[in-house]
Amino acid sequence: MSDQPLIRYGRTLILGTTNIKQSTAMGILNDGPNGSVNGKIGAHVVYEDEWGRQIIRTIGVKNGSYGGELANQQGTALTTNVLKPIRQVVEIGFKNVPPGKFWSAYNYASSYTKINAVTGTYPNKSIDFTKLMIAKGGLPLPLDVKVKLEQNVLEFTWDADLEIEGNDPRDQVMLVAYFRDSRRAINLLSGARREAEKETIKLPRFTKRMVIETYLAFVSDDRERMSDSVYAGQVIWDKND
Image (cartoon, rainbow, N blue to C red; front, side, top):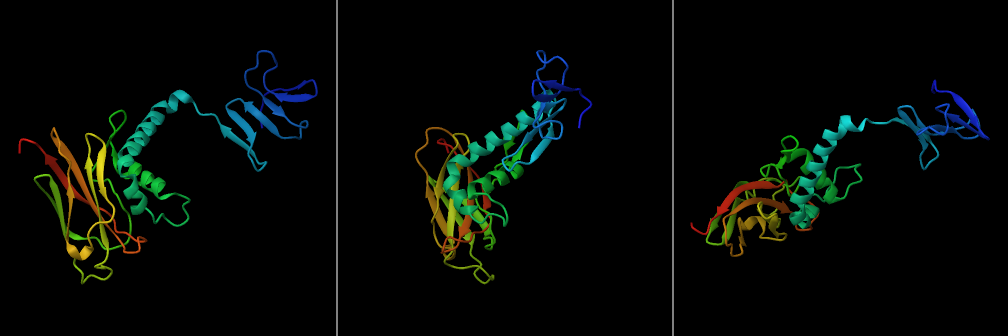
């Protein structure tokens, strides 16, 4: 396993430096030369896992991977922050996790968001709100989704297209109005039926200009199936308008 010297130290055999007192990393042979090894040997570390299997791995060079680790941390932080105000929605919308994956709905949403909605390079990564999803599923997508702002009310409309197979008039709409600057959101979990073709969100009174990202998805009447979400567009509220 190694070209390093084998030293007897008392009743223990040690792989490593010939100077025990100066050694900062060594591998210990349990039960003699035919036994298992534990510890650091050169650029490798050897240990037993919880099932008693002996594992050997190369020790990474921290400086070489530091930039990648920071980029990963920034992507994770962006994902956590963007999903926090819409967690209730995505726990419904991502309920149907892929087969064979031991994920919760939220973990599935986090993984999807980090891969698909985080854009840019470190240290300037950001969220692409046009690619953020609040739901993933197989129900048919609505057609001609639109949103408009009237006074302090967001009005969402869509074409139910009930002749399409799988479009159930009893499906319920889920809506999100996401305030990107304040990292807050208004979530509507059980809105109008698909056949209604319209639903609204009443906005609070703002004191400054607000950029609002809007999303729509459908969930079945039994809350077990959902559609992919649709990015309905960006709306800007300005008290001077």
